[in-house]
Image (tube, rainbow, N blue to C red; front, side):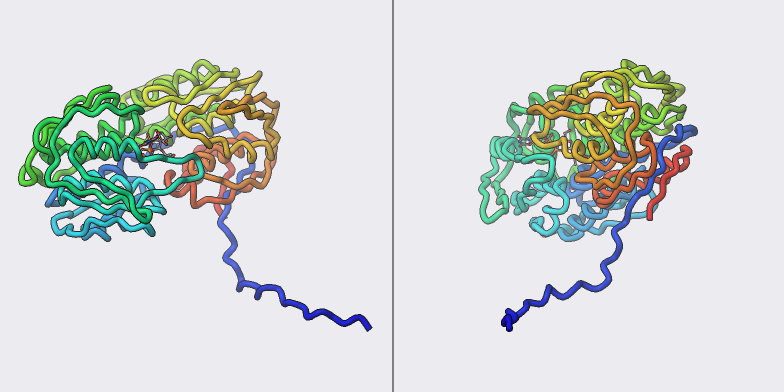
Length: 437
Ligand code: EPZ
């Protein structure tokens, strides 16, 4: 008789696993109506970090309700700040902040929390911040942060996954950034606020979020000029010169661009309110080249009209004011169902085409070669079950689902909720057949 080998029982089945949330879209409906853009995630997170500079109460308005905002609040609370999040507003009292360590378990969940390094170094002359680690879209190096802070006089070393920074004092100097890195510009700019003398950052990031951050610093008593241009000048002040203030977060240009491209993918006519068209010139320009009719009705109001097939386009992502990498995935969903062949080249991140595999499941015809995607437009995308790999890929899959024939089911929504506030509700209000289950 065959000796039965001792069977190894399968691992105990887990209890009833919570069914993962998903977004369901029945595509093919033209978008119509008016939608309001929320405040910019990539502004709020940095201003929250900058509030650490101030022994007082700072208030941010027009704040979106995002998981990343709640995560950053946790980081600040860990450091000793009192953070109150209410509808559209965050209040930060950093008076009693004494801790200067941002731990791995928090920083690894929110890489933007690495931006507490500059303010902590400025205020306490020391900081211990976990290295943010890589992320799905690329290596996300911090060498430019380190180089700039060292030029200001910080001693820095990396040990067991943490950046240790300390200084007797920070002294203003001229710093040239090899790349116009947002994060490096922000950390250096914030460290320089309390440095002795003047700091000049050359080849600074010019994104509107940098300007919003500088506006906050000036509102609390700092002295920054040139934000939004190639050269930023920071005149150091004393800690006692800083005081609480209230600032407004700028509109989220990535969200506004997502609505523009969704309207182009489905056809229709929408009005976007609360946006800042000045932050969207490259985005609007590409949309118009593809055949969308876009008009600026009043300050902050953009009208988009798109019917029929959009024309092909070539896109290269570059630092602001060029075409933003954060809208590369959403516009790919548009060209995937436009006429002709489009070429999208990604120059900011090494691995930001992860939406391609999912778009192919929906029938997209995309070939990758190096950092370029060659997208041959197909008559119609097909609904399918797809999974988001990162924040902007999630938005791209929604845009594709809105245009596709049939039903699309999207999981991986924790990525989406990091950077978009109730996006499915906003699209439903524009007539889309979209639900979260
Ligand atoms: C900000 O990231 C945004 N995030 C990103 O948005 C955005 O894509 C990016 O700027 C570029 O616009 C936030 O603001 C929270 P970088 P950041 O420093 O500051 C390399 C989203 O979807 N680099 O400008 O991390 C780096 O590896 C997110 O909302 C170095 O080589 O971007 C990357 O390839 C994704 N050395 C490039 O520069 C450094 O020291 C851009 O990085 C720093 C960066």
